[in-house]
Length: 253
Ligand SMILES: Nc1ncnc2c1ncn2[C@@H]1O[C@H](COP(=O)(O)OP(=O)(O)O)[C@@H](O)[C@H]1O
Ligand SMILES: [Mg+2]
Figure 1 (cartoon, rainbow, N blue to C red):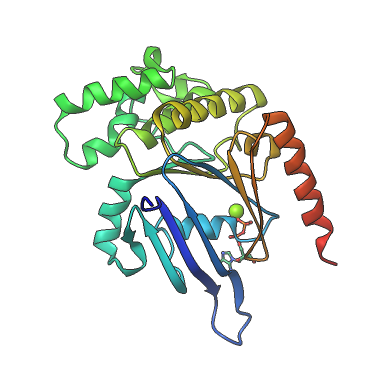
Figure 2: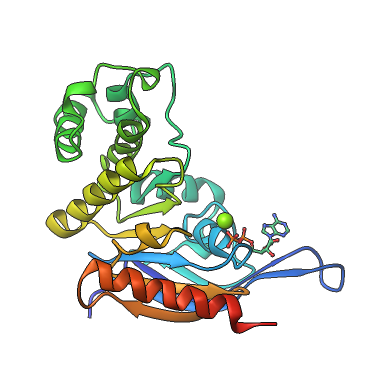
């Protein structure tokens, strides 16, 4: 069997010192994501979603357990190695776009490649290719302040993708978009996943966004609670997600 893109084994994350208001953000979480999957992470506020994403994205350290990305054990890497690893193997899409206002859309997308020291003659074709995939070829010379929220987020998706990372990680990527722009971003992400086999893991609290995923992991109180797969239409999956969320809400007193 192929090495998973993400392999999380018995991961724990505690905040604070033992005995002194220690909070358990992740408690023995294990799961894998395989190449070409589109996985959603859902759960109530405070359940550990952002912590999990931060631990996988190397922005935070697990207290215990192992996290492997494309076969590399990131829990054993040093700071310098981690930042190289992050810039080569991971792509991020955040809720608030994180675009640089004084760079053009083209320059924003090119940034992960320029930071790696790739010569500009090699950068051009790559930027143009992802821009085309995401439908933003016509706005490459504009600045973030001159384009819509939906276009900004597709620019962020293009930037996340341009260096061909092992996986794209999203933290509420549709959080700042209206429903029309959210749908067009999710369609674009689905295309990337289905047509180019890009692996995606996305944290979201929004059942509509989550319905675009093929598999969803639900976490509660830092533990995996349930996992569901999309087997038929997105509509049916949406209803199934709502049912699980309703169960989560009433599970504990
Ligand atoms: N930096 C931190 N220091 C202390 N506790 C934290 C910190 N970050 C998160 N937590 C706690 O860890 C738990 C999980 O938080 P988080 O991962 O942000 O949840 P979610 O993203 O699902 O809302 C919560 O109880 C939260 O209060
Ligand atoms: Mg969060």
